[in-house]
Image (cartoon, rainbow, N blue to C red; front, top):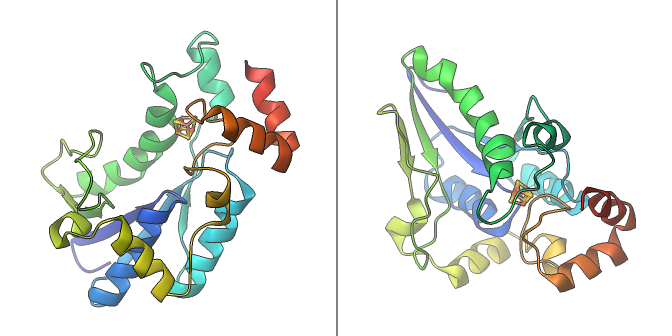
Length: 204
Ligand code: SF4
């Protein structure tokens, strides 16, 4: 962390953000980056395994940001109303809130924070990353360099990391019980992680 500036990069446990971490290390080794992962406590074991491999590549620990309140707490707050595509409160409370709680005091101290986000060249800029604070600056290196999905795969392959193992049966990282997974992914969750499947069933 140099002077009054700080550089952070959030890892989702998925492909794109891992590739961005590799890319930044290879193309901007001069920038000292703090890598972080927002842990909902409901992650697949494969996610931790992949983050471990990435730590090996980076030669650096990944900071784990845990939410102060877990999924069950928020579910009560929302009157047992499960998150849905329309009311996706889980992302806000379990993923964005811990990040805000981490950086807010630093911004208040007057730090300028650069946050590197893995939006690819072939993707639309998604909402939720825009910053309301002028000292929190969002950087999109893949978008700037026009790196697309094939480019991401090349980066991971080249670094010897490959893909997280769950990609063979699931399309996204995130909570085991994510309500946005496809039907077939529920079936595979049941086959591979029966305890996590039972837990998810109890929510429904
Ligand atoms: S992975 Fe799914 S359930 Fe978990 S926070 Fe994200 S959207 Fe919500």
